[in-house]
Length: 285
Image 1 (tube, rainbow, N blue to C red):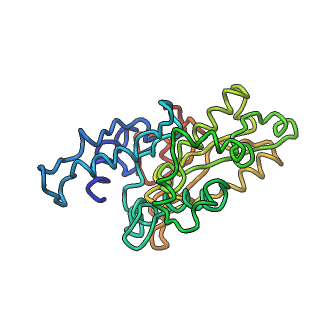
Image 2 (tube, rainbow, N blue to C red; image 1 turned 90 degrees about the vertical axis):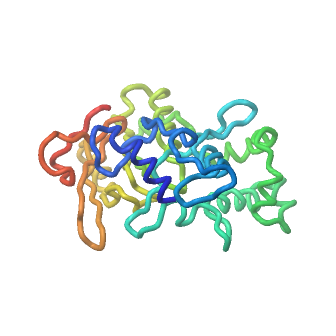
Image 3 (cartoon, rainbow, N blue to C red; image 1 turned 120 degrees about the vertical axis):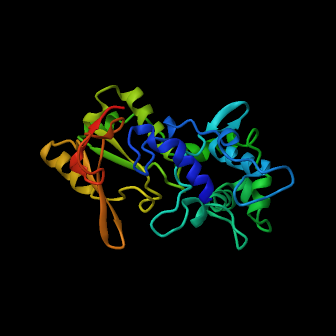
């Protein structure tokens, strides 16, 4: 996993104009596994290269999930391959299946099928996760989940009633979250803007956190207060223009950065330490 992370970050890190160990927006990175990863010679499997099967697996993770020829779910953003402060890759920590059991990606899906989907659960009592997934047909079965989709999914983009009541919504997402796909948050926000109009930031703002794993950790500035800005927004009509965030390693603050309301991103002023928030401004890419 270390070699994959090295190649991804070598390709993507500087896209935001600063070589700082972070990928500010993985969508801006043109990383192609088949082109950018070293290939093992046929029949070999070495630590410094990737077999054809391994490259195909990585491409499937990054690629969109397709159903009946159309995109059903976005592919995973790059960034979580890297090791966080605990030395553990975001992928390896919990997500990818291991010899001693399934990872989060498999467990989330299989548990949903087993305990929530009636027609799957009745057949799954004696199945392991792999068996349960094997019976799910991505081209045939999604329409059978429509009732659950209507009940469970937070996808309604008409927030007019919420706005009329004076509601304020601050949402954040780690770009390197290895458990929940960050593109879900970005695409939902963009869909709300399409529905509610350009004045959406008056009541709803999204803050993306480069390098942050699931709810914290990773290589980004993952410690910040998101509650106080909401209180100030509601009680003092002061919309959050930036949120100060810190990266803490072994109890010590090693970097501070502003988190910016999407689609703005933190941009280096050109002077001073890249580890000090004061040297960054929020600006559109």
